[in-house]
Amino acid sequence: MKNNSKVISTAPKTNKRWWFVSLILLGAVVNYLDRSNLSVANPLIAKEYGLNPLQMGLLMSAFLWPYALANLPAGWLVDKFGPKKMFGWACGLWSAITIATAFSTSYSFFYSLRMLLGISESPFFPAGVKAIDKWFTKEDRGTPIAVINTGSQISNGIAPPLLTALMLAYSWKVMFIIIGVAGLIVLALWLISYHDPETSSDVVVKAESDIQNSQVTGDEAKVGWVDLFKYKSTWYMIIGNFGLIYTMWVYLTWLPGYLVTGRGLSILKTGWIASIPFLVGIIGVPLGGIISDYFIKNKGYAPIKARKIPLVCGACVAAVAVIPVPYVSDIHTCIALLSLGYFAASVPTGVMWTLATDVAPKNMVASLGAIQNFGGFIGAACAPIITGAIVQATGSFEYAFLVGALFLIISAISYGVFLQKPISE
Image (cartoon, rainbow, N blue to C red):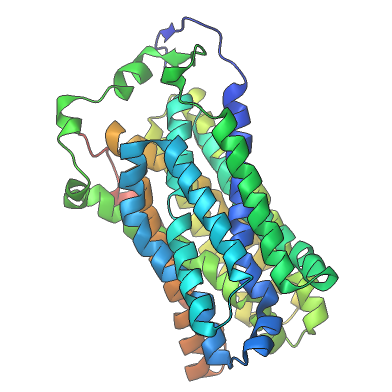
């Protein structure tokens, strides 16, 4: 049954909100370049500081644990102070920290800055989702949230050639400074142009049901940040996101190593081939949002049900794709399966954040989204460690792929079977 809710508006819908989406997307690209710069500069930094592989591995993981934990208060801060302030503070801090890293003089100082980078970046996506929740209705917010999540895939695709070119043309330190300055430019654009719809003469077209749902009821107002952990839906989202992001970070941290050690490719050839899955991921992320919006607008599906279609299907297809990877001998088939797996795992990425806007009470949208992201990046932090332990213990990647597929199936079950209704119900 289609949604025939009455539409209320006092002014025409403007394209201004899509400028905000574009600006958040640009911020996402720069945000992920800040995360990727260390992996690109890895050999030069290790040589300059005299780091062994273990020290370098610890340095590369210094971002993940603080980022995961900082997501817990970050969402609450965004709900309390609003997306403009928290986006601005986050962007300014991570840009300053990136620039400061270029002037680090010791391993301990470098390590501390990477930890601070993780903390400073944690409010970014909750703030972006909160801004879109303000400017878009439930029928059409899936696509813009998926678009801003495409920023990570764009960055993963362009980071190796772009950052390598900057590093070789100048130095790794100048490369860090350039990325930091890019963040400051995004900050200036954001502070100058962004404002919430309630402070604007531009009125977004909303359905009557959406307007009613956007008002915080007495019951919703009683749901505080700590109270979110009392609801099963919160835990289903944490568990579900753990499995999905775990798989993404197995790709991000171990794909080049697998192609070199597991498939015998040269480092030069690996650099090009390893970019293929990330490039198809650019298509997968917005596709998830488009699919979910289609089922709401054209099929009349409830928002949570519509979001779960690309989410669950993506997780299942990704699991099926990665299981046979270690058993195929042809490298082209191997890359095709890896690309299909990453593409399918990318489809749920934008939908997961949109799902938080449908499940959470209106005053807790950023909080629930950040808590879900916390679960995901616990998975991200575990991915390189578990994969490395499996490879060291068995001498192959076979069980690493099977473990990734298992987590994907658990994710699909957690979201698809157990997550059923909004927290306010």
